[in-house]
Image (cartoon, rainbow, N blue to C red; front, side, top):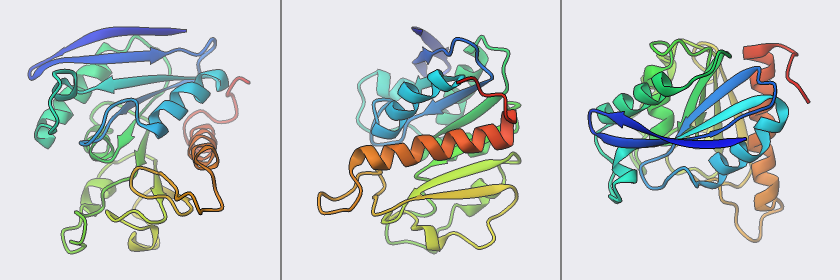
Length: 219
């Protein structure tokens, strides 16, 4: 079941697209990155697959994107939008807050405040491209809840080997082989795009089952 509704924020109107499971055991709230919207391949894959596994998926479109702007607003405004989206959710299940790229940063910054039981960070921008000295690891470490990072092997904003070992706190890392920041894989790659998205979905599902809801996910 799918539904859509506006989300008023202090910075304009956002949009929440909800894909509901029949007997949900968790809800995953996802926001997009600074260069795209909720139609991103990974967000779309999760929204298509997880409701059938007992997990609601709520996709939040930030006000700047809904207004047709090409450049994201400041990080603090993204947090305001995500808080408003979380407040607008009408669910009684455990909440996992997440997103891709800038959305992943926002999720890490707000997860504990929102009462989330987990944080999903897809393509976490560990640093700006070519500037590894400007690390954003502190944001990830500060999430304060179990966190899953899903990272492309060729991500210029943070390759998997650039993350510390061990990872901070209760953080896990899932790697998508040969994928870039958008989790696209080259045509010559051994993996297809469908394979890459399957890794995203399966890694996320396994982690939510293990860290958030136990073994009660409905098939």
